[in-house]
Each structure stands twice: as structure tokens, then as C-alpha cells.
Length: 262
Image (cartoon, rainbow, N blue to C red):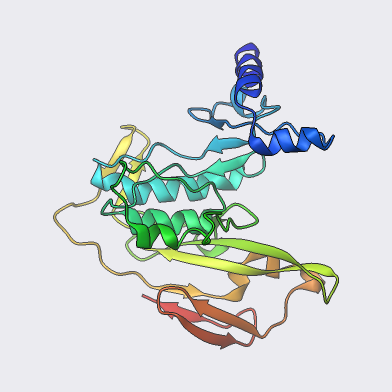
């Protein structure tokens, strides 16, 4: 407890965020500080944060470990189920010119997490980075933390050979015409088969590096977005589905209407 309080007080004093300074000038009680809590999943850490609100949701991004990237995504998505109730999960940095950069970029886009890269100066993929920000450089971060959909919650998405990891999120906004907060759902499907964390050996287990990773099927439904499933107030449709990669629109009549992906 003493270590955590001392760390937070020190960071609060020396690394207060710009937004906090503006808040204080306007007499708004806000104590946000620039701190990401890493190596911090122990119980004595998680339940003692008073001023910091961001927590690393996974192990590090390892650019030189090719088998670490899919399991990294598995870890951050499932860990966020718990961590989002306490802090804002951080899905770590990545490098935009890395062979797995597209995977990491898509994960950050759905994750509702901070988006930042560890590129060497001048060593960037501008076209990829432009997909993650607006023209002014601000990040269109989703309203919640990205977590797995119900249908893959208890599946072994890294080793069963058939299940895609599906992550959903929510974008809320106030509709001035309706006078209420509404929103849209976001769903991403990832093929992360081939590697899982081995709890006994405490290292990543690669199934068979000599064999290629086979395609998996994924079914996307509006019901995958939990915010649409609100009991008597559940959304009834129709829904407009936009495919980011294929740039196509489809009309889905009900919560259970499906789009099949491979």
C-alpha cells in the first residue's frame, strides 16, 4: 500500500496531464495523471489505485518474438474483461512497420485503449497510422473497453483450430434530434490460432511451427454487441453493417441476422 501511494503521489506531482491543468484552472476536481501501471496485476496493486486510471492488460509487445503477437491479442482481450471494471486497460505499444503491425493496429482500433507506437524516428507506415487517427492526430477511441463476444468467451481461440477471436466495443454519442445518448457497435474477428500461454512452463506454447495456420470461420451478428441486448429495450433493427476491410454495406434485419467471414 505504501509503495503504491508513494508512486502515485510522486507521479501526480511531476507528471500531471495537460487536461488536469486545464481542469484545475476552471476549478474542476480532476486528478488525471500521465501514468500507465505496468507489472501491476497483483491484488495489492489493482485495488489500491487512487489517482492513476490506466493499467497494462498484457505482457509486452515483443518485436523479435514472432509467436508472441497473436497470444498478446488473446491476453489483452480476455484480461480486459476484469480490468475494465477497475481501470482503463492499456493494450501496449506496437511498431507500424512490423510484420504483425496490421494485427496490432486492428486490435488497438477495437480495444478502446490508448494508441501509441514505438517506431524508430523516420521508420513508420503512414498509411497504417492514418487509419487509427483523425486528420488532426486525435484518436477516435471507442467508448468502452474491447472484450470477447459471448460465443467465444469460453473457447480456446489459440489452439482449437476452429474458433475466431471476436472482440466487440461500443461508440456512444448524443443524438440531438432524439435528445438521448445512442450509439453504434464495433466487432472485429481475428484468426489467432497456433499459440497459447502454457501455465505450467510459463511461456508461450507453439502448436506446430512447421504447419501453416488454417483459416477459421466467424459469424458476425448485431447481438454480439452487448449494448444492443438491453432486455425490453433491446434494439430491434434493422441494422446497417459496414465492413472495414471490404468497404461494403449490408442490411441486417434483426439482432440474429448473420454475416459469415473466413
